[in-house]
Image (cartoon, rainbow, N blue to C red; front, top):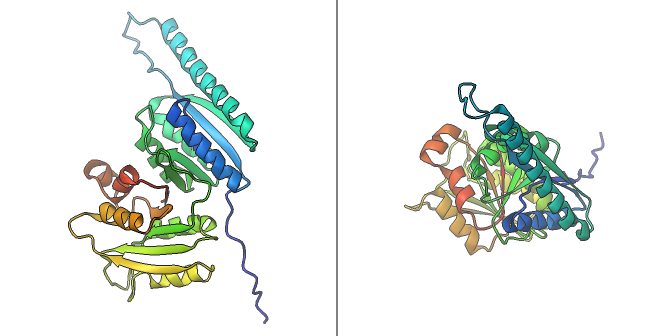
Length: 287
């Protein structure tokens, strides 16, 4: 039987969701996402989510229900006004876009983002946001959308990322998923480093040579790949990895998210949280 030698093209990013806030930092992120969308000939969806006021308890006789209804309507007007302002800023850029507005209780903001993220190829988030619900948005989107997200530190450009890529490799399922989700960004890569921090040789994870099997897979995509095994020493995973990424001048970091207990990392910290909070360059994560 003759084999078809033509390889299928990697997944393309054609629908991009971005966290939208009508602030200077928020517009900077949306503009970066617009550049990313333009580079990929993609449609940009900017989602602004406002927080609904808390429903007063029935026993709170001094808080009329009518006041709550007014506060709710005001919150909805504010997020709609924010969305309209963002749309006006996007119009001159000449890209395909839409701006959506939603207002949800604080605990459901992440669920709202995850719902929209399911119908996008990738979601873009800031490294912080004004409402202080950043971790909730990211974590819920990671766990409930089934799609990757891209964290963009303030001032970073996204138009040409993927030339120099640092992959945080622990041979786990989450890391493998992140690599697969990032292949579309690495097709024109000039330097791809598979970085293993304190790797342990074992049949269940890394195999005899940590990173070798992944390097072989990516090389078949035509990527220039090398494996760097580095010591964590006393710095911890995130610090060691980010220092190495900076030394190679990476323009993109790729990492799996929450390979260990999410609750444990929330309470005690961990590699995922540290990478999210400390990265100084675009970070693609998948779960």
